[in-house]
Image 1: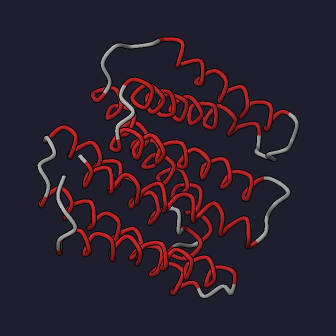
Image 2 (image 1 turned 90 degrees about the vertical axis):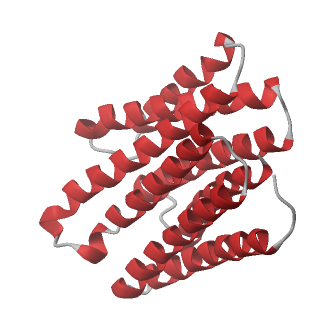
Length: 235
């Protein structure tokens, strides 16, 4: 952990810029300013990744912890860039970019899950009840057409729910076992990340396809990544 010196304020400024640029991205997306959307989203992601690297450089975090958090942040940035498929590619490439972006986010979730596993001590299997529960929630939402997702994509979303449930269960484990500021911050980041995933799927495939729902899901996502950055500072 380090004090409220210059590095802290640089990290805080980068995180604030990341969230502000995310809102610019949503606004420009609604106005169909494609170049502004792509640039603001990309720079927003670069900001939280840069904040993470600065946090690692000026703190005393152990190497595995640093690599896993930075891995999650970098994979998130790559997912952000590839999911700007409307802004950066012709329509015939959208499915490829969508799959690539989803794969990067999946890798980020796995980084955070491994992070929680390495932070935890005793394994409590009962906490992993969240895995089937989250998978069941996703299945019900697709089955009842609350999320109008093509059936051919159901397996992919169930796999995503599996990994998300693992991350969520790992977060619960470290928060219950050792509820210190670092653990609480990182666990909160994971819970907010899952909420952002659910909000994003609802915006994409549900009835709440409004700009305000877009602001909610994007804000939750960037807040989650920012909390992972601050987990480095508190370590």
